[in-house]
Length: 269
Image (cartoon, rainbow, N blue to C red; front, side, top):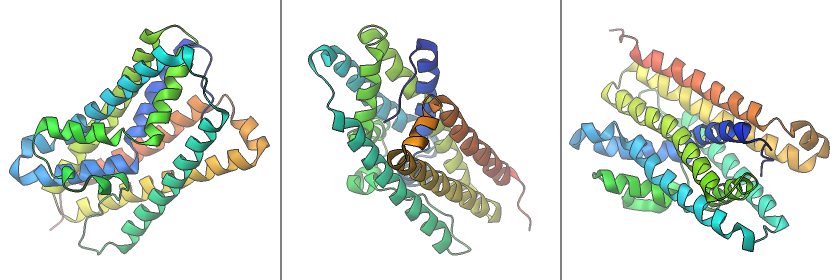
C-alpha cells in the first residue's frame, strides 16, 4: 500500500492521478471493451458511453466505501497485515493481467484486433452483455466489490481522517472517481471508434495499446516486488508516489494518443 502525502493539496492531486491510473487497469479496459462491442451494432449511441457509465457505477461504490470507513474510522484500527495483503494481491493481479495481455498481442492473427484480457470480467458472465445505461453502471459497481478496490478506498478514507471528517473522505472518493471517469470515458469512445473502423490502422492501434497495458502492468508489479523485498528501494520510493503516478499516466496517455492518431489516419487502399 502506498504512503500517502501529509498535506491536503498533494493528497487531492495524488488521488485524482491514482483514479486516472486505475481507469487504465487491464480489467477495466477488457470489460469496457466487451460492453462497447456488445452494444456497437444494436445501440451505437450507448456504446460510446459504456466507459463513462462503467466508471460512474464503479466510482459510486468507491465513494460509499470511503464515506462508510471514514465514519467508522475512530472505532477501527487497521491491522498491520492489511496493507501487505493488499499489495500482494495487487502484484499478483498485475503480473497475471500483464502476462495475459502480452500473450493476447503475440497470439493475435494479423487480421484480428487485439482485445484486452481481464480476470474479474470473466466472473460477471453474461452481465458484460447488457444494453441499458443503468445495467452498464451496475457492472462497474460490481467491479468495485473486490479486495484491491475496497482496500484502496478504505485506505484513502482512513488517511482523510488526518485532515478532517467524512467530508474529506467524500472529496477524495469523488476525485478518484473523476480521474477514473476521464480515462475510462475516453477509452470507451476510442474502442467504439476502432470497432467502427476495422482496417489495418485500427489493427495496429489495438496492438500498441495492448503492448502498453501489458508492459505497464508488469513494470508496476515488478516495482512492487522490489519495494517489498528491498528496504533500500522502499526508502528511495518513499514520498515519490505523486511523481510515479504522473509518470505512469503520462506514459499510457502518450501511447493512447499515438494509437488514436493511428486510428485517425486514412486507410491505405
